[in-house]
Length: 258
View 1 (tube, rainbow, N blue to C red):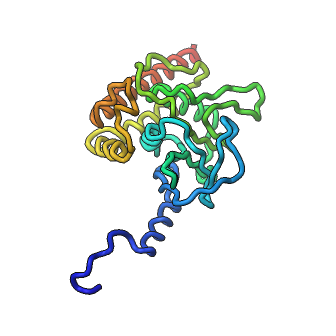
View 2: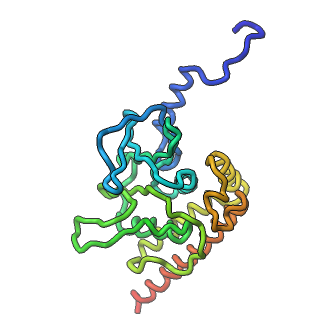
View 3: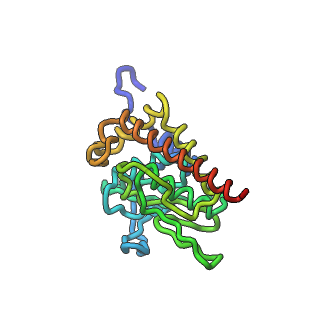
C-alpha cells in the first residue's frame, strides 16, 4: 500500500469469506447467525398464518409479523440455554426467523425437554405461547411454536414474551421429576450466562444492537429501565423459577417414596 494512502474501511473479500465460513461452522445452538444478504421466495408458506417462506440458498426464513426487536433480544438471551431460531433482519430491513438446522442439534429425551423448555419461557419471560400437549398416541406430539423432529427440539416466535407479572407457580401440571430436573439445569445455565459483570456486559451488548429501546420492547415491565434493571429482573425471575422447580422435585419424590 502506498504510504499515506487511506486504509480499507472494511474486510477484504477473502476476509469476508473466512468470516462467513466461520459462522457456518459455528454451533448454531450457541452462536447467533449473521443476517442474510439476499432472500428469495420459495413458493411455500408457514402452516400457521400462511406467511411466505424465503431462502438465502442454504437456510429457510419466515417473516415476523410483530415485535421483531424484542423477539431478537429474547432469542439472543436464550442462545446456549434453549435451541432457538435466530431472529435476523433481512435485506429489506424486516425481521425474519431463521429455521435452526435440526441435524446439528443433539437428540434428547423429548418429553422432559419440551416440558422444561416451555416452563422456562413461561416463568422467566412470561411467554405462555410455547406449549406441549401430551398425546394418547405414542408417535404423536402436539405442540405450539416448537419444531420437533426425531427427538430434536427448537423454539421460535417469542412475540408473547413480556417480562411482567411475577411467576407464582408452575404452569404445567404434567411435570415429572425428570422434566423438573431438566428445568432447573436450564435455569442454572441461563443464570450463569447473565449474572455478574460479564453477564451485564453480554446483556448490554445485545440491548444496544436490538434497534429499539427496552421501553418499547417491554413497556409494562421494570426491565425497561436499562440493562442493569433487565439483568436484575431476569435474575429475580430465574431465582424464583429455580425454587419452584426444586420444590416440585421434592414434592414428587416424596409422593413416589410414600
